[in-house]
Picture 1 (cartoon, rainbow, N blue to C red):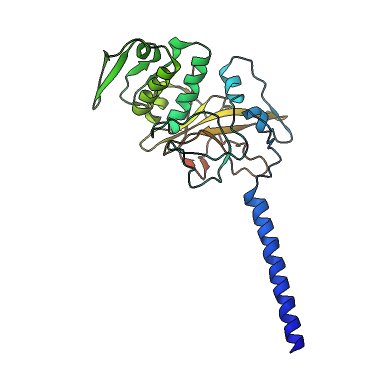
Picture 2: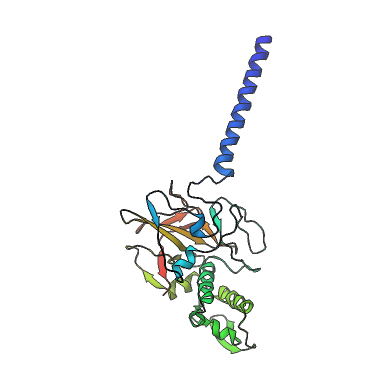
Length: 285
């Protein structure tokens, strides 16, 4: 009996040790982000995400669209992706960092809208107000300067009329209201149509948009890139999603370099949160 009791104790101890070991392994793999490419104290895209060994991050000129995206401010490391109601989305495993940009309080700022938001904020910050205009899915273009003058769209099906219905207001709060209108009537179809086509055979640039137009469709934007000695590029992708939620940098499935993506020039582009069977690449000009 003593031998059996001792054996049982040894078995129990072994099981306990294995359980603790597995628990620690699971925690280290899933509970904490131990990426060698993470600098937790970094406050921007370029400051938080390091380039993999053998790659050098692209240097961009101050004031450019590319420099703006590289230096987008991030929320503290470990921040969750929140929906438009301020609730954490159910799956928090697929993002590397969260942008310090509000989502709004309506289910509007989704995937294409996140790209529009970034472009509009860049132009607004640089006072390029005359360039802030976006197409609706109907094909009609709506400009910030018109909205600031009090012009509003009246939409009935595919018919859109623009009428003077409000007073002049150049405030940032009114600019956000303008964007909500754009988000409501624009999408992947209009975004793909109004931007300049980029060949998939070449190298993509920071600021390029990978889009699958449709309903539903999806869009992600390149916010950084790095190059190795062979001239090969890897990229960081950011996205919004449905329902409207925090704009975030997406982890990749490219082992050893995640969240960087080694984007193919012919094959589909995929991730757990999106799949582009026949992706289109578009560029703001």
